[in-house]
Length: 304
Image (cartoon, rainbow, N blue to C red; front, side, top):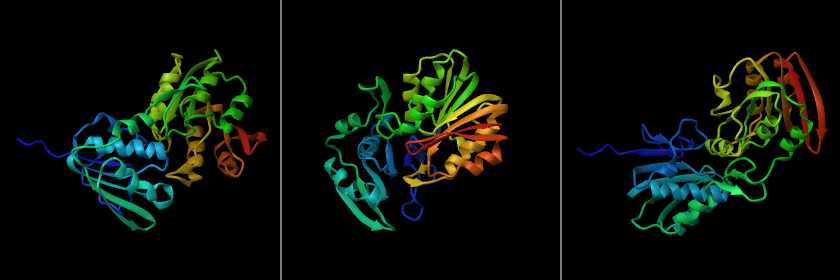
């Protein structure tokens, strides 16, 4: 008996621009619970991809997609013109693929059939793979937030944070810069690291060897993932989703922190100066104070 065809989807392509087959398997590392595209070779009958904006990350994803497809399998990949879409056709052609390209609603949409032979796939996969950053001595991967440096806001929070005590969580942990600093305090009994990006969580697992650390690949906005009764939460919340500014992300982190903390527990949050989180903080916490405003960032302590 012939095995059923497997179809895939990467990210959330706009429904008006591309049709995703019913039952398609999700492969985006930003979708908790999704499958890992890099593990497949010659398996998928088709894949629809909303390509990521970063050049190295995008070429890596395209290479993984082409390798995962059966010869003759269909790839539909799209991206906004100003976020990599204008480069898609050329990048696919460099892999030895014939491309049909159209423009629609400020996107470029490329359709291609996987040939028997592909060019340059291994190099693109290696360029975008996890690696140890020599300057930092830490694991990271292109596509992860601030993948090759410590974000200045995180650095400011590390320098400002008092010695934490008890059980806490790091919301949006990235590769673990902030968590490493927190766990240096022997007074911290447990720390849960949470991020929506599978790659970040996997890198953090390499970078943090403290047995007091626990790792969760989860979307904080959906609730239910964070332990209750925490003594503290630290966070440098994201404010972009799909390349566009989304202030609701930070507000969701604030609300979930309040729900996770015990009475008297504290949230330490760093944000870009222009982000208006004050109202959300005051709505969710009993006491809020601006601790530092420096270098384009501000740090708040909020006590439940």
